[in-house]
Image (cartoon, rainbow, N blue to C red; front, top):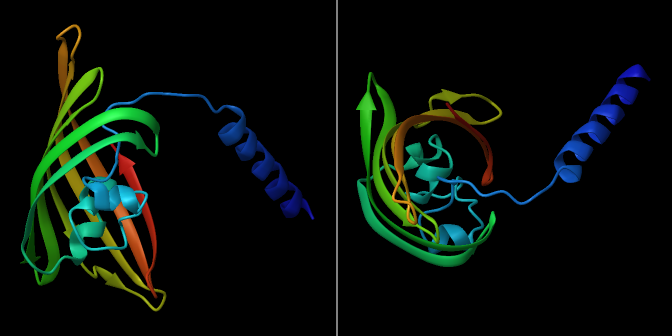
Length: 185
């Protein structure tokens, strides 16, 4: 009985935090898909092969087993985060490799995004495992992206740069079902 009460109170608390404190916010370097394909899938690209998953979860592109290169262009007035005037150009490559008898994929991506007020440049290098840990429940994979970020305010001309590390995990349960988690350090 006590566990049910704690569960009920925690659900109420998180509901108030998520829905009650909702307000518009604007951010830079949002994790959105690279192309119209990813936007059409509502950024749910971790279950499909390709470079779109590199920006969403770094553990997801490890399933690529052939060399892939690509250029992407996205021009949109609406993303999952809200209204925008976004133009995005990117060039990337995914290279499958074997390290210490483990399959994985190395990734490289350069991206240039501009909207009404800012211009973002991202250069990222990453690695993702493929079938790192097999269990009866599914397959667990890990991945990381090291990013070099540059942001320029268009009206003032001020700019800043920084580094970031994305760490991700993905559990492929079979039948096309995945559970994934990404953290930014």
